Amino acid sequence: MEFVLRNMTEGIVLKKLNLMKESLDCCTCEHCLLDIASYALNRLPAKYVATTQGELLSRLDSLEPQYDATVMTVILQGAILVKDHPRHE
Ligand SMILES: [Zn+2]
Image (cartoon, rainbow, N blue to C red):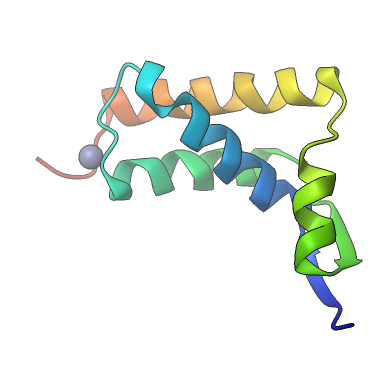
């Protein structure tokens, strides 16, 4: 069994962003989505775990609703920022 050190917050944000991108009122090209992810990850605490890839994915599915809502809020804030200040034409 191979264990790796992963920041769960990163997986959570990217997964959530992927689910939400259709409903975001901003550009959703890869550049902008990663800008939103950076914004969110700089504001959410990192959650490092020693895990295997499979276990990480199952952990991502068992989030507390409160934390889920916090992640969504920060992603929406990032989307507003990207919409107002896109870093490309
Ligand atoms: Zn864009």
